[in-house]
Structure formats: C-alpha cells, structure tokens
View 1 (tube, one colour):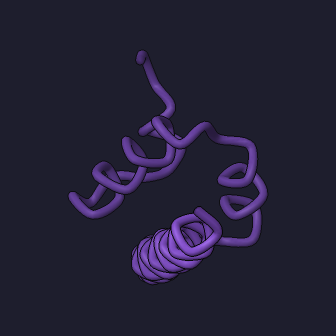
View 2 (tube, one colour; view 1 turned 180 degrees about the vertical axis):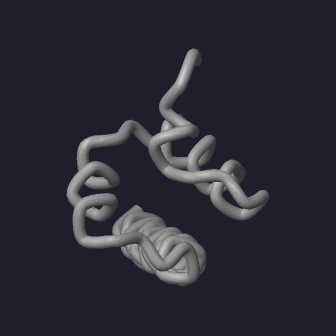
Length: 75
C-alpha cells in the first residue's frame, strides 16, 4: 500500500511540474506577442487594467493596424 502511495505522489509531482512548465511556455509566448505590439507607456498602463478577453481583442486589433483604444470600443 505504501508503494502505491509513493508512486501516486511521484506521478502527481511530475504532472504538476509538466503543467507548470507548459504554463510558463504559454506565458512566454503571450509576453512575446504583447512585446511585439510596441505599446506606449500610457497604453501599457491601460493594458494592465484589461481583462484577458479585452487583451485578446486588443491584440487582434493592433496586429491588424488598429489601436489599443479602438479595441476598447463596443464589446
């Protein structure tokens, strides 16, 4: 019984590490996209207040030639 518990703990630890690593890679990718937007200091302040949904919409707007402020129009 102890052996099964140890195996379960080791497996759970490995799974947690894998999830953490994947999340970190996703954060790195998202940060790279955000950095590529070349936001002004004022836009960076606004960015910090946006929800993830608003940020995703803003990314699409900016990548298509729009502005951060335009992306905040009617939802």
